Length: 455
Image 1 (cartoon, rainbow, N blue to C red):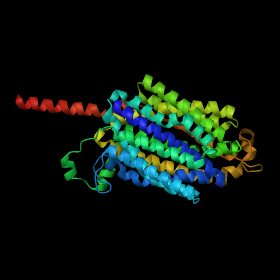
Image 2 (image 1 turned 90 degrees about the vertical axis):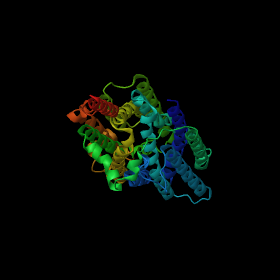
Image 3 (image 1 turned 60 degrees about the horizontal axis):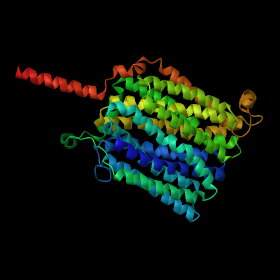
Image 4 (image 1 turned 60 degrees about the vertical axis):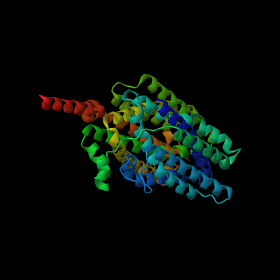
Protein backbone atom coordinates (compact mmCIF):
# COMPACT_ATOMS: atom_id res chain seq x y z
CA UNK A 1 0.00 0.00 0.00
CA UNK A 2 2.93 2.33 0.70
CA UNK A 3 4.10 2.30 -2.92
CA UNK A 4 0.58 2.93 -4.16
CA UNK A 5 0.10 5.89 -1.79
CA UNK A 6 3.43 7.49 -2.80
CA UNK A 7 2.63 7.29 -6.51
CA UNK A 8 -0.95 8.43 -5.84
CA UNK A 9 0.29 11.48 -3.90
CA UNK A 10 2.50 12.64 -6.75
CA UNK A 11 -0.33 12.24 -9.25
CA UNK A 12 -2.67 14.10 -6.88
CA UNK A 13 -0.35 17.13 -6.74
CA UNK A 14 0.11 17.05 -10.51
CA UNK A 15 -3.65 16.95 -11.05
CA UNK A 16 -4.03 20.13 -8.99
CA UNK A 17 -1.78 21.98 -11.45
CA UNK A 18 -3.52 20.44 -14.44
CA UNK A 19 -6.96 21.43 -13.16
CA UNK A 20 -5.80 24.98 -12.53
CA UNK A 21 -4.47 25.19 -16.07
CA UNK A 22 -7.63 23.67 -17.54
CA UNK A 23 -9.80 26.19 -15.69
CA UNK A 24 -7.62 29.11 -16.79
CA UNK A 25 -7.72 27.91 -20.41
CA UNK A 26 -11.53 27.68 -20.22
CA UNK A 27 -11.74 31.31 -19.09
CA UNK A 28 -9.21 32.45 -21.70
CA UNK A 29 -10.94 30.64 -24.59
CA UNK A 30 -14.47 31.68 -23.56
CA UNK A 31 -13.47 35.33 -23.25
CA UNK A 32 -11.88 35.16 -26.69
CA UNK A 33 -14.62 33.29 -28.60
CA UNK A 34 -17.82 33.34 -26.48
CA UNK A 35 -18.78 29.96 -28.03
CA UNK A 36 -19.29 26.50 -26.56
CA UNK A 37 -17.76 24.92 -29.68
CA UNK A 38 -14.31 26.35 -28.90
CA UNK A 39 -14.36 24.68 -25.48
CA UNK A 40 -15.73 21.36 -26.67
CA UNK A 41 -13.14 21.17 -29.47
CA UNK A 42 -10.35 21.16 -26.88
CA UNK A 43 -11.95 18.07 -25.38
CA UNK A 44 -12.56 16.59 -28.82
CA UNK A 45 -8.94 16.80 -29.99
CA UNK A 46 -7.74 15.29 -26.73
CA UNK A 47 -10.08 12.34 -27.08
CA UNK A 48 -9.59 11.92 -30.82
CA UNK A 49 -5.83 11.59 -30.34
CA UNK A 50 -6.38 9.22 -27.44
CA UNK A 51 -8.59 7.17 -29.73
CA UNK A 52 -5.76 6.76 -32.26
CA UNK A 53 -3.36 5.27 -29.73
CA UNK A 54 -5.93 3.26 -27.76
CA UNK A 55 -5.73 0.10 -29.94
CA UNK A 56 -1.97 -0.12 -29.37
CA UNK A 57 -1.83 1.04 -25.74
CA UNK A 58 -2.69 -2.36 -24.29
CA UNK A 59 0.12 -4.29 -25.97
CA UNK A 60 2.55 -1.50 -25.05
CA UNK A 61 1.53 -1.52 -21.38
CA UNK A 62 1.60 -5.33 -21.21
CA UNK A 63 5.20 -5.22 -22.53
CA UNK A 64 4.44 -7.12 -25.73
CA UNK A 65 5.31 -4.34 -28.17
CA UNK A 66 8.01 -1.65 -28.19
CA UNK A 67 7.56 2.12 -28.34
CA UNK A 68 10.40 4.31 -29.67
CA UNK A 69 12.38 1.13 -30.35
CA UNK A 70 12.19 -0.47 -26.90
CA UNK A 71 9.81 -2.11 -24.45
CA UNK A 72 8.90 0.21 -21.60
CA UNK A 73 7.95 -0.76 -18.08
CA UNK A 74 4.74 0.67 -16.63
CA UNK A 75 6.81 2.94 -14.39
CA UNK A 76 8.68 4.34 -17.39
CA UNK A 77 5.42 4.89 -19.28
CA UNK A 78 3.98 6.94 -16.38
CA UNK A 79 7.13 9.10 -16.28
CA UNK A 80 7.17 9.51 -20.08
CA UNK A 81 3.56 10.70 -20.11
CA UNK A 82 4.12 13.25 -17.34
CA UNK A 83 7.21 14.55 -19.16
CA UNK A 84 5.33 15.02 -22.43
CA UNK A 85 2.53 16.86 -20.62
CA UNK A 86 5.09 19.15 -18.99
CA UNK A 87 6.69 19.90 -22.37
CA UNK A 88 3.25 20.78 -23.78
CA UNK A 89 2.80 23.27 -20.95
CA UNK A 90 6.21 24.77 -21.74
CA UNK A 91 5.14 25.23 -25.38
CA UNK A 92 1.94 27.04 -24.35
CA UNK A 93 3.94 29.14 -21.91
CA UNK A 94 6.37 30.27 -24.61
CA UNK A 95 3.58 31.06 -27.09
CA UNK A 96 1.78 33.11 -24.45
CA UNK A 97 4.99 34.90 -23.47
CA UNK A 98 5.68 35.91 -27.08
CA UNK A 99 2.08 37.00 -27.74
CA UNK A 100 1.39 34.30 -30.35
CA UNK A 101 -0.99 32.09 -28.38
CA UNK A 102 -4.24 31.21 -30.17
CA UNK A 103 -7.11 28.84 -29.43
CA UNK A 104 -5.96 26.28 -32.00
CA UNK A 105 -2.70 25.85 -30.10
CA UNK A 106 -4.71 24.28 -27.30
CA UNK A 107 -6.15 21.83 -29.81
CA UNK A 108 -2.63 20.69 -30.72
CA UNK A 109 -1.31 20.34 -27.17
CA UNK A 110 -4.56 18.70 -26.10
CA UNK A 111 -4.11 16.11 -28.85
CA UNK A 112 -0.51 15.41 -27.85
CA UNK A 113 -1.50 15.00 -24.21
CA UNK A 114 -4.38 12.75 -25.23
CA UNK A 115 -1.97 10.28 -26.83
CA UNK A 116 0.24 9.87 -23.78
CA UNK A 117 -2.40 10.29 -21.07
CA UNK A 118 -4.19 7.24 -22.46
CA UNK A 119 -1.05 5.15 -22.03
CA UNK A 120 -0.36 6.61 -18.60
CA UNK A 121 -3.84 5.95 -17.25
CA UNK A 122 -3.68 2.40 -18.55
CA UNK A 123 -0.24 1.80 -17.01
CA UNK A 124 -1.42 3.23 -13.69
CA UNK A 125 -4.73 1.35 -13.49
CA UNK A 126 -3.22 -2.01 -14.45
CA UNK A 127 -0.53 -1.62 -11.76
CA UNK A 128 -3.13 -1.64 -8.98
CA UNK A 129 -3.70 -5.40 -9.22
CA UNK A 130 0.06 -6.00 -8.84
CA UNK A 131 0.55 -3.54 -5.97
CA UNK A 132 -2.43 -4.52 -3.82
CA UNK A 133 -4.39 -7.63 -2.76
CA UNK A 134 -7.91 -8.09 -4.08
CA UNK A 135 -9.66 -6.89 -0.93
CA UNK A 136 -8.16 -3.42 -1.44
CA UNK A 137 -9.25 -2.98 -5.08
CA UNK A 138 -12.38 -0.97 -4.24
CA UNK A 139 -10.53 1.26 -1.78
CA UNK A 140 -7.70 1.89 -4.23
CA UNK A 141 -10.17 2.67 -6.99
CA UNK A 142 -11.94 5.16 -4.72
CA UNK A 143 -8.59 6.84 -4.07
CA UNK A 144 -8.11 7.07 -7.82
CA UNK A 145 -11.48 8.87 -7.90
CA UNK A 146 -10.03 11.37 -5.45
CA UNK A 147 -7.41 12.27 -8.07
CA UNK A 148 -10.31 13.97 -9.83
CA UNK A 149 -12.43 15.22 -6.95
CA UNK A 150 -9.75 16.30 -4.47
CA UNK A 151 -8.16 18.95 -6.71
CA UNK A 152 -11.64 20.07 -7.78
CA UNK A 153 -12.22 21.40 -4.26
CA UNK A 154 -9.76 24.24 -4.50
CA UNK A 155 -7.87 24.15 -7.84
CA UNK A 156 -10.56 25.93 -9.94
CA UNK A 157 -11.30 28.44 -7.16
CA UNK A 158 -7.59 29.14 -6.76
CA UNK A 159 -7.17 29.42 -10.53
CA UNK A 160 -10.19 31.75 -10.74
CA UNK A 161 -8.57 34.11 -8.24
CA UNK A 162 -5.02 33.84 -9.55
CA UNK A 163 -6.11 34.23 -13.18
CA UNK A 164 -6.85 37.89 -12.57
CA UNK A 165 -3.61 38.36 -10.61
CA UNK A 166 -0.89 36.34 -12.34
CA UNK A 167 -2.81 35.45 -15.48
CA UNK A 168 -2.52 32.33 -17.60
CA UNK A 169 1.27 32.76 -17.59
CA UNK A 170 1.61 32.35 -13.82
CA UNK A 171 -0.79 29.41 -13.65
CA UNK A 172 1.20 27.56 -16.31
CA UNK A 173 4.31 27.93 -14.14
CA UNK A 174 2.45 26.39 -11.20
CA UNK A 175 1.44 23.51 -13.46
CA UNK A 176 5.07 22.86 -14.39
CA UNK A 177 6.07 22.73 -10.72
CA UNK A 178 3.40 20.13 -9.94
CA UNK A 179 4.53 17.99 -12.88
CA UNK A 180 8.04 17.88 -11.41
CA UNK A 181 6.64 16.52 -8.12
CA UNK A 182 4.72 13.78 -9.92
CA UNK A 183 7.80 12.68 -11.88
CA UNK A 184 9.98 12.70 -8.76
CA UNK A 185 7.63 10.47 -6.75
CA UNK A 186 7.45 7.88 -9.51
CA UNK A 187 11.23 7.91 -9.93
CA UNK A 188 11.65 7.16 -6.21
CA UNK A 189 9.36 4.11 -6.16
CA UNK A 190 9.34 0.57 -7.54
CA UNK A 191 6.20 -0.21 -9.53
CA UNK A 192 5.68 -3.96 -10.12
CA UNK A 193 5.84 -5.19 -13.69
CA UNK A 194 4.08 -8.36 -14.93
CA UNK A 195 6.42 -11.05 -16.18
CA UNK A 196 6.06 -11.78 -19.88
CA UNK A 197 7.27 -15.31 -20.68
CA UNK A 198 10.23 -15.35 -23.03
CA UNK A 199 8.43 -17.84 -25.26
CA UNK A 200 5.59 -15.35 -25.69
CA UNK A 201 8.05 -12.65 -26.77
CA UNK A 202 9.82 -14.98 -29.19
CA UNK A 203 6.65 -16.46 -30.68
CA UNK A 204 4.53 -13.36 -30.85
CA UNK A 205 1.22 -13.32 -32.61
CA UNK A 206 0.54 -10.66 -35.19
CA UNK A 207 -0.09 -7.13 -33.98
CA UNK A 208 -3.75 -7.47 -34.92
CA UNK A 209 -4.07 -10.67 -32.87
CA UNK A 210 -2.49 -8.96 -29.87
CA UNK A 211 -4.78 -5.94 -30.19
CA UNK A 212 -7.92 -7.98 -30.77
CA UNK A 213 -7.23 -10.35 -27.85
CA UNK A 214 -8.76 -7.82 -25.46
CA UNK A 215 -11.95 -7.68 -27.54
CA UNK A 216 -12.15 -11.47 -27.73
CA UNK A 217 -11.66 -11.83 -23.99
CA UNK A 218 -14.53 -9.46 -23.18
CA UNK A 219 -16.91 -10.64 -25.91
CA UNK A 220 -16.50 -14.26 -24.80
CA UNK A 221 -17.85 -13.38 -21.34
CA UNK A 222 -21.47 -12.11 -21.50
CA UNK A 223 -21.32 -10.53 -18.06
CA UNK A 224 -18.25 -8.43 -18.87
CA UNK A 225 -19.69 -7.59 -22.29
CA UNK A 226 -22.90 -6.32 -20.65
CA UNK A 227 -20.84 -4.33 -18.14
CA UNK A 228 -18.95 -2.71 -21.01
CA UNK A 229 -22.08 -1.89 -23.04
CA UNK A 230 -23.94 -0.30 -20.12
CA UNK A 231 -20.81 1.75 -19.33
CA UNK A 232 -20.64 2.98 -22.93
CA UNK A 233 -24.29 4.09 -22.88
CA UNK A 234 -23.86 5.89 -19.57
CA UNK A 235 -20.66 7.73 -20.45
CA UNK A 236 -21.89 8.79 -23.88
CA UNK A 237 -24.87 10.57 -22.30
CA UNK A 238 -22.71 11.87 -19.46
CA UNK A 239 -20.00 13.32 -21.71
CA UNK A 240 -22.53 14.83 -24.09
CA UNK A 241 -23.96 16.86 -21.22
CA UNK A 242 -20.62 17.32 -19.49
CA UNK A 243 -19.06 18.94 -22.56
CA UNK A 244 -21.57 21.78 -22.18
CA UNK A 245 -21.19 22.18 -18.43
CA UNK A 246 -18.76 25.12 -18.25
CA UNK A 247 -20.29 27.00 -21.18
CA UNK A 248 -23.80 26.54 -19.76
CA UNK A 249 -22.86 27.93 -16.34
CA UNK A 250 -20.91 30.85 -17.78
CA UNK A 251 -23.78 31.69 -20.15
CA UNK A 252 -26.42 31.54 -17.39
CA UNK A 253 -24.33 33.45 -14.84
CA UNK A 254 -23.15 36.31 -17.07
CA UNK A 255 -19.61 34.91 -17.30
CA UNK A 256 -19.24 34.66 -13.52
CA UNK A 257 -16.05 32.63 -13.02
CA UNK A 258 -16.59 32.60 -9.24
CA UNK A 259 -19.83 30.62 -9.62
CA UNK A 260 -18.17 28.12 -11.95
CA UNK A 261 -15.29 27.73 -9.50
CA UNK A 262 -17.62 27.30 -6.52
CA UNK A 263 -19.50 24.54 -8.35
CA UNK A 264 -16.24 22.78 -9.07
CA UNK A 265 -15.31 23.10 -5.40
CA UNK A 266 -18.66 21.64 -4.38
CA UNK A 267 -18.14 18.74 -6.78
CA UNK A 268 -14.71 18.15 -5.29
CA UNK A 269 -15.97 18.17 -1.71
CA UNK A 270 -18.76 15.72 -2.51
CA UNK A 271 -16.41 13.51 -4.52
CA UNK A 272 -13.88 13.33 -1.70
CA UNK A 273 -16.61 12.56 0.84
CA UNK A 274 -17.94 9.83 -1.43
CA UNK A 275 -14.44 8.41 -2.00
CA UNK A 276 -13.65 8.41 1.74
CA UNK A 277 -16.96 6.68 2.47
CA UNK A 278 -16.16 3.97 -0.08
CA UNK A 279 -12.57 3.65 1.22
CA UNK A 280 -13.78 3.15 4.78
CA UNK A 281 -16.85 1.05 4.10
CA UNK A 282 -15.57 -0.80 1.04
CA UNK A 283 -18.78 -0.16 -0.92
CA UNK A 284 -21.50 -2.72 -1.57
CA UNK A 285 -20.66 -6.39 -1.11
CA UNK A 286 -22.07 -6.93 -4.59
CA UNK A 287 -20.29 -4.23 -6.56
CA UNK A 288 -22.89 -4.21 -9.34
CA UNK A 289 -25.34 -2.46 -6.98
CA UNK A 290 -22.87 0.35 -6.40
CA UNK A 291 -22.31 0.62 -10.15
CA UNK A 292 -25.96 0.78 -11.24
CA UNK A 293 -27.18 2.63 -8.14
CA UNK A 294 -24.54 5.29 -8.71
CA UNK A 295 -25.79 5.77 -12.26
CA UNK A 296 -29.37 6.27 -11.08
CA UNK A 297 -28.34 8.70 -8.33
CA UNK A 298 -26.16 10.71 -10.70
CA UNK A 299 -28.94 10.93 -13.29
CA UNK A 300 -31.50 12.23 -10.78
CA UNK A 301 -29.12 14.82 -9.34
CA UNK A 302 -27.95 16.07 -12.72
CA UNK A 303 -31.54 16.43 -13.89
CA UNK A 304 -32.26 18.73 -10.95
CA UNK A 305 -29.04 20.61 -11.72
CA UNK A 306 -30.07 21.27 -15.32
CA UNK A 307 -33.53 22.44 -14.26
CA UNK A 308 -32.03 25.03 -11.92
CA UNK A 309 -31.14 28.55 -12.94
CA UNK A 310 -29.52 29.81 -9.74
CA UNK A 311 -26.51 28.81 -7.60
CA UNK A 312 -28.90 27.99 -4.74
CA UNK A 313 -30.10 25.03 -6.82
CA UNK A 314 -26.89 24.25 -8.69
CA UNK A 315 -24.73 23.86 -5.57
CA UNK A 316 -26.73 21.20 -3.68
CA UNK A 317 -27.56 19.38 -6.92
CA UNK A 318 -23.87 19.30 -7.83
CA UNK A 319 -23.03 17.97 -4.38
CA UNK A 320 -25.56 15.14 -4.67
CA UNK A 321 -24.42 14.31 -8.19
CA UNK A 322 -20.73 14.05 -7.34
CA UNK A 323 -21.39 11.84 -4.32
CA UNK A 324 -22.34 9.04 -6.70
CA UNK A 325 -19.28 8.87 -8.93
CA UNK A 326 -16.69 7.43 -6.51
CA UNK A 327 -19.10 4.59 -5.73
CA UNK A 328 -19.98 4.11 -9.38
CA UNK A 329 -16.40 4.17 -10.63
CA UNK A 330 -14.75 2.16 -7.86
CA UNK A 331 -17.45 -0.54 -8.02
CA UNK A 332 -16.95 -0.94 -11.77
CA UNK A 333 -13.17 -0.91 -11.48
CA UNK A 334 -13.19 -3.50 -8.68
CA UNK A 335 -15.17 -5.89 -10.89
CA UNK A 336 -12.77 -5.50 -13.81
CA UNK A 337 -9.66 -5.85 -11.62
CA UNK A 338 -11.01 -8.98 -9.93
CA UNK A 339 -12.07 -10.71 -13.14
CA UNK A 340 -9.12 -9.98 -15.47
CA UNK A 341 -5.72 -11.64 -15.14
CA UNK A 342 -2.96 -9.03 -14.47
CA UNK A 343 -0.88 -10.17 -17.44
CA UNK A 344 -3.73 -9.42 -19.88
CA UNK A 345 -5.23 -6.39 -18.12
CA UNK A 346 -3.41 -3.96 -20.40
CA UNK A 347 -5.08 -5.35 -23.51
CA UNK A 348 -8.52 -5.77 -21.94
CA UNK A 349 -8.48 -2.33 -20.34
CA UNK A 350 -7.25 -0.87 -23.63
CA UNK A 351 -10.30 -2.38 -25.32
CA UNK A 352 -12.54 -0.75 -22.75
CA UNK A 353 -10.63 2.53 -23.03
CA UNK A 354 -10.80 2.50 -26.84
CA UNK A 355 -14.58 2.17 -26.87
CA UNK A 356 -15.11 4.66 -24.04
CA UNK A 357 -12.87 7.24 -25.72
CA UNK A 358 -14.65 6.63 -29.03
CA UNK A 359 -18.10 7.38 -27.67
CA UNK A 360 -16.74 10.26 -25.57
CA UNK A 361 -15.09 11.74 -28.67
CA UNK A 362 -18.34 11.55 -30.60
CA UNK A 363 -20.17 13.17 -27.69
CA UNK A 364 -17.65 16.02 -27.49
CA UNK A 365 -17.74 16.51 -31.26
CA UNK A 366 -21.51 16.87 -31.50
CA UNK A 367 -22.18 18.66 -28.18
CA UNK A 368 -20.91 22.09 -29.24
CA UNK A 369 -22.69 22.29 -32.62
CA UNK A 370 -25.90 20.87 -31.08
CA UNK A 371 -25.81 23.60 -28.46
CA UNK A 372 -24.71 26.52 -30.66
CA UNK A 373 -26.78 25.79 -33.77
CA UNK A 374 -29.80 23.77 -32.60
CA UNK A 375 -30.78 24.09 -28.95
CA UNK A 376 -29.55 27.61 -28.20
CA UNK A 377 -31.36 29.26 -31.16
CA UNK A 378 -34.46 27.16 -30.44
CA UNK A 379 -34.61 28.46 -26.85
CA UNK A 380 -34.12 32.12 -27.69
CA UNK A 381 -37.25 34.33 -27.36
CA UNK A 382 -39.49 33.28 -30.25
CA UNK A 383 -37.53 30.06 -30.88
CA UNK A 384 -39.45 26.92 -31.85
CA UNK A 385 -38.75 25.21 -28.49
CA UNK A 386 -39.13 28.31 -26.31
CA UNK A 387 -42.91 28.11 -26.22
CA UNK A 388 -42.84 24.50 -24.99
CA UNK A 389 -39.90 24.57 -22.58
CA UNK A 390 -39.43 28.28 -21.86
CA UNK A 391 -41.55 28.09 -18.72
CA UNK A 392 -39.19 25.43 -17.30
CA UNK A 393 -35.77 26.58 -18.49
CA UNK A 394 -36.34 30.23 -19.30
CA UNK A 395 -35.16 31.70 -22.58
CA UNK A 396 -32.02 33.39 -23.76
CA UNK A 397 -28.35 32.48 -23.49
CA UNK A 398 -27.77 29.12 -21.82
CA UNK A 399 -31.40 27.93 -21.87
CA UNK A 400 -30.86 25.64 -24.87
CA UNK A 401 -27.78 24.08 -23.29
CA UNK A 402 -29.76 23.50 -20.08
CA UNK A 403 -32.47 21.66 -22.02
CA UNK A 404 -29.92 19.42 -23.72
CA UNK A 405 -28.19 18.84 -20.37
CA UNK A 406 -31.44 17.63 -18.78
CA UNK A 407 -32.12 15.28 -21.70
CA UNK A 408 -28.72 13.65 -21.20
CA UNK A 409 -29.22 13.51 -17.41
CA UNK A 410 -32.56 11.69 -17.68
CA UNK A 411 -30.80 9.24 -19.99
CA UNK A 412 -28.24 8.48 -17.25
CA UNK A 413 -31.01 7.52 -14.86
CA UNK A 414 -32.73 5.32 -17.45
CA UNK A 415 -29.48 3.52 -18.30
CA UNK A 416 -28.90 2.65 -14.64
CA UNK A 417 -32.46 1.40 -14.19
CA UNK A 418 -32.28 -0.57 -17.43
CA UNK A 419 -29.10 -2.28 -16.27
CA UNK A 420 -31.05 -4.17 -13.62
CA UNK A 421 -33.15 -5.74 -16.39
CA UNK A 422 -30.07 -7.43 -17.92
CA UNK A 423 -29.52 -10.75 -16.11
CA UNK A 424 -25.95 -11.29 -17.31
CA UNK A 425 -25.05 -7.87 -15.88
CA UNK A 426 -26.83 -8.40 -12.56
CA UNK A 427 -25.08 -11.75 -12.10
CA UNK A 428 -21.65 -10.79 -13.48
CA UNK A 429 -19.86 -11.24 -10.14
CA UNK A 430 -21.20 -14.78 -9.73
CA UNK A 431 -21.09 -15.94 -13.35
CA UNK A 432 -17.57 -14.71 -14.19
CA UNK A 433 -14.86 -16.21 -11.97
CA UNK A 434 -12.12 -14.10 -10.40
CA UNK A 435 -8.67 -14.33 -11.94
CA UNK A 436 -7.10 -15.68 -8.72
CA UNK A 437 -9.82 -18.32 -8.54
CA UNK A 438 -8.80 -19.49 -12.02
CA UNK A 439 -5.16 -19.64 -10.91
CA UNK A 440 -6.00 -21.63 -7.79
CA UNK A 441 -8.12 -24.04 -9.83
CA UNK A 442 -5.31 -24.52 -12.34
CA UNK A 443 -2.83 -25.16 -9.50
CA UNK A 444 -5.21 -27.63 -7.86
CA UNK A 445 -5.69 -29.50 -11.15
CA UNK A 446 -1.93 -29.62 -11.65
CA UNK A 447 -1.42 -31.03 -8.17
CA UNK A 448 -4.11 -33.65 -8.78
CA UNK A 449 -2.46 -34.69 -12.04
CA UNK A 450 0.92 -35.05 -10.35
CA UNK A 451 -0.66 -37.09 -7.54
CA UNK A 452 -2.37 -39.32 -10.10
CA UNK A 453 0.94 -39.84 -11.91
CA UNK A 454 2.64 -40.87 -8.68
CA UNK A 455 -0.22 -43.25 -7.89
